[in-house]
Amino acid sequence: MSRQCVNLPTIKSTIFDQEDERSVVYFLGHDPVLDQYKVVCTLVSSSEDLVKITSEHWVFVLEVGGSWKRIEFDQPHISTRPGLCISGVIYYLAFTSMSHDIVVSFDVRSEEFNIIQAPLVVSAFVDSVGFLEYGGKPAIIDHTSLGQNGLVDIWVLEDVGNWSRRSLSLQPCHIHLVDSNIEWTMEGATQNGEIILAPFELCSPFYILCYDLKKNVLRKVEIKGILDHKFSSLDVNLTLMDKSDSIVHLDT
Image (cartoon, rainbow, N blue to C red):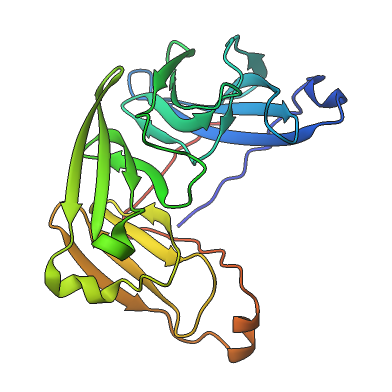
């Protein structure tokens, strides 16, 4: 195992000169045609009520002597989920000042942004909504009804602007694994198609749920070894690592 660190230069922007809420989000994308990696940085300044949003977008090519280049995009937004890079395109779920959700796509090779309207029933500010790759395509996973009814809705982006919906119902033998009194949040997904659900707050005993969307199989995994006094802290910061290799070769 090896690791390489690349120091990114400072972005010369004045967007944060205003006394507003601020956020900086990075996305890593890969162009499979040119075998080139690029970093996309989104700077956001917004009012506390999110009525006013200003955003800037910058791209950095991971190569010797690289520098930030600003990309014009006239749709101010705030990203609400980690991004995905699929076949040379970065996708991420976002929120606009027009009070609706969108999916933003960025073509790594052409460096062009596009907007895709998210399904109207989906809210990116709900913890029970996740964004991941499903069958090689971007997908929105809504498990709001998992605890009460054992239902999960999957919205798959088939092509630009068109979503297909699939609903899964837990097998009766698995329903008891989901405690309806616990608020669950989606923490990620594995290369094998399992989504990982964890309690929003730390509770004892602590366990996560692994839900195989393809096989419609749910399993419970208890996390042992947490000291008793740690349960006095309610917040959970869970980091997941898939056993699959994820290698980025950087010639810098």
